[in-house]
Every structure is written in structure tokens, then in C-alpha cells.
Image (tube, rainbow, N blue to C red; front, side, top):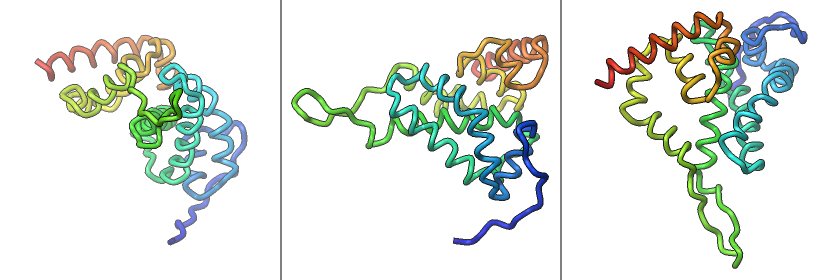
Length: 188
């Protein structure tokens, strides 16, 4: 296995921003990963719990998320949006992958293994990601796509989405209005 090239990064503190923490994680700074985990794991776990009632599956998705952050932090681009949104995208995909995977089974009364049935929300998310709507979402600008994902897909309020994206609430409302109009055009 080839070692990553180390790039110098500033020392991390609790006040260090997420983007800088991701740069430090890309340089293999475990302390930076620990801070990201402390900062983001609680809200990620809470939001994933709204989508899946199985705490073991949620815990596995959270763990897989931060393993992926460790592995792929060098792929994060600040111009692509907020670090929290980038981490959330990884988390929701990990949850869907876990739910779709062959290891997601439960033991029935007679001890027989049976596959769980994905929830309606999981099926909708899969169709969005792989259907016409997913293609239309991909054609939106990053800022419009981020606000539509935060509100429509993740179930956040406009105020919560604005906070997550680091914009004013009015800006988030305008972007959401523009995103919906553009999606209607693309899907017509």
C-alpha cells in the first residue's frame, strides 16, 4: 500500500473549520478525524435514525461514513459545498448501501434468515439517485442541488438547510425556489 504524500497543515483545535479538518485528515491526522467525528457523528446518527429504526444499521453506517471520510478526505473540494453536506452525502449513501447489502438480514421466529424489506423512503431515494430525477438533479448547479437535497431529500427545514449550507435563510429560500423551477423545466 502506498503512503499518501504528506502536506503540511496547521495544527487543529476545536475552533478549526471543517474544511481545514478535512485537509488535516487527508494528511492522515487522526486528531482531525476525531474532531470531525465528535462534531458531526451525533447529528448524522440522529438524521439516519429518522430513516432507519435499526440502531445497529445506523451505527454501522456512521462508522462506515467516517472510515470513508478518512479514506477519501483528499477528494473533498471546498468549491463543491460545505464539508458537513459532503459528509452527510457519504452517510446517507452508506445507509442505503447497508440496507441494500446482503448482510442486512434479520432472524425470524423459526431461526430462518430473511431479507428485510426496504422502506418506501429508501426505494424513493434509490429511484431519485438512479432515475430521471437523479439525472435532473445532476444538471442543477451545486448550490441549487445542495439546497434541494437538504430540504427535499434530507427533510430539513429551510432554516436548518441554510445553517448547514452556511447561507442566509432568505438565500436558501431563493435557491430552493430556483431549484424547483429548474427541476420542473428539466423534467417537463
